[in-house]
Length: 79
Image 1 (cartoon, rainbow, N blue to C red):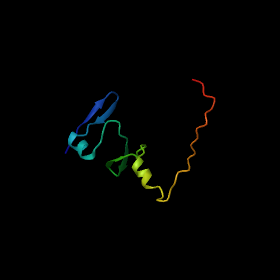
Image 2 (cartoon, one colour):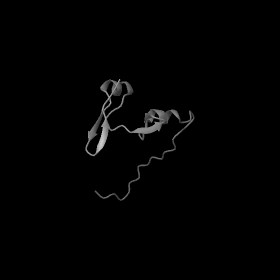
Image 3 (tube, rainbow, N blue to C red):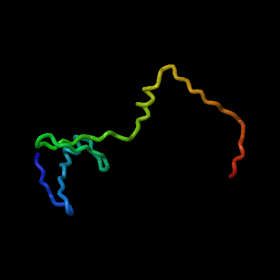
């Protein structure tokens, strides 16, 4: 697979072929880390800032119990 470096304003750009983008599941807005290893360019997904609720819940201890207090008391809310 080959790609051509193009001019983009005052910079240079490399378009990645759609087949490669699909294989890597890269989407517009995704962050990638770019590093050089000798003369090779390495692209890696950056750490995702998004949080997966199922992963967080899986980390909770099995014996966890919430200590929430519910009350019918009303404050001095202004609407």
